[in-house]
Length: 189
Image (tube, rainbow, N blue to C red; front, side, top):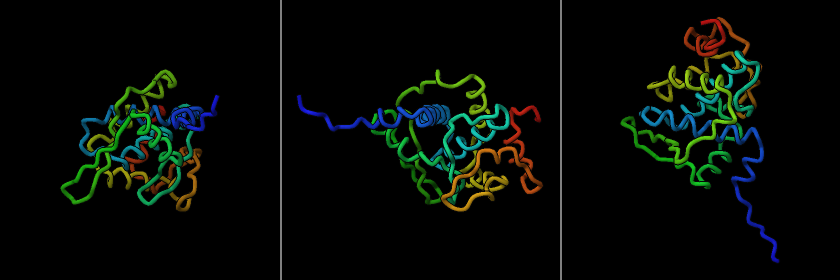
């Protein structure tokens, strides 16, 4: 019997529990944001980032467990590209490019499959839903600016990981809106 050297990307990605949680959460966010005309790649990244930060403050752990790195437009999950590409390869998602009035191009992730929410707690989903609601109809620039106002942003250089423990650091520099996002569901509303 010949050896099969074809590797299924889904198997490689989803064998890692952190990648699997990130993949399923990406699908959940994309499904929930279908009607948000301002939902694109930057907003997806910030929803994931703020969700993990709020969860860290509220539950003492991040929802995805994935590290976020500092990029020009704000924090990005370090494993975003391979996990997203895996979802596309599996035909669980597609990227739709939309030309905006501003001339920019928005990259919208469209979920073609339902996420497996059994790997999350109801508290996890409540946090993500609240973050989606708080950022609904905000532009990529607005959510990016919001992420830059958190002290965590100052703790890393470009391409470096942002420590998740920085979720507990709030400073005078953080605006009321950024601070309220981090305090969301932390019992300090």
